[in-house]
Length: 432
Image (tube, rainbow, N blue to C red):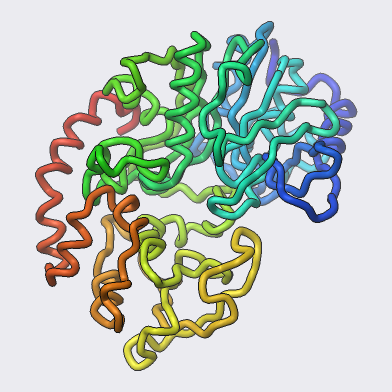
């Protein structure tokens, strides 16, 4: 199959036209992340990056290497785990689009190439990535193609064997951000497990880890495993989604010693030191590179009474609370309902805190902000919630902060476990 040029530009124009979708009336969002209208939804194309901006040294993600996977999909009934990040941007065929500055969603690309997509499975935040963190999303159906969209969040985190009926091959193409508590790697685990149980091969289209330049944080303890942390890895795991899939298999983390038959479609021009700017928001509350970089450090505030900026345009770039003294925390913000935060913490209340929007790129977790906020907070008995332990993966971190440990003293307790993890992960790393 020749992929250098699409054979019929007019036909592709029709594809782009139906992919753009239409607006729907306000109801509970479905798995596409948009309101449900008669149970049907459109597939969309995202236009947040210009194809013309890419150069010869640009990172080529797995999806942009269809020569490596189209023949594997041809003639099979396909399931695909995808969301708004599952786009092609650099493949030469995109130059023939009527508007070449738009990327093309993988589902649209595969549909054009007559790949038989049976079902789309959508992770947290839905297929379009607009649902709040933790929000229930409904299943739906793509209005134009009739492809069912199944939510993999809420009670249905793992595809059931019934949902997998008729699927001969599964594709996983989701952009991760490299933090243990970012739930896409948990979705990956459950998809691998379900595929292994059904004897369905899985193809993972690899994508960069924007926080892949370091590892840091406490290792998760088994007794504190949850959907925001399933594996004994540090908070910042330093692996691409393809590498992580191989690690899940290799370390025997699937139940009952299952092994998933996986094929990773690798990237080109990528190293773990590559500074990669995501062309599409991976979720509503990670709007830019700064938020993505600070997310592993600031997400700890989600397990405290403080706000990490949800309900503002500065999500995971600020933190604060009305109870913090403005003398020491002079920056103020007022959360209001917005995309990804329909009912934000401290809605309509002025929060005193810190603005980190101009903070340099970090290469390790920063606990100083958490320690300073704890020291300044009045009712210390209410500072840590049960969710903090799930985020930390251990009760030790809370105790250390309560006992007055400094950041350096806390981090010193991570070094030996981090060294052991780093040694273990080396055999799964595909990129320098």
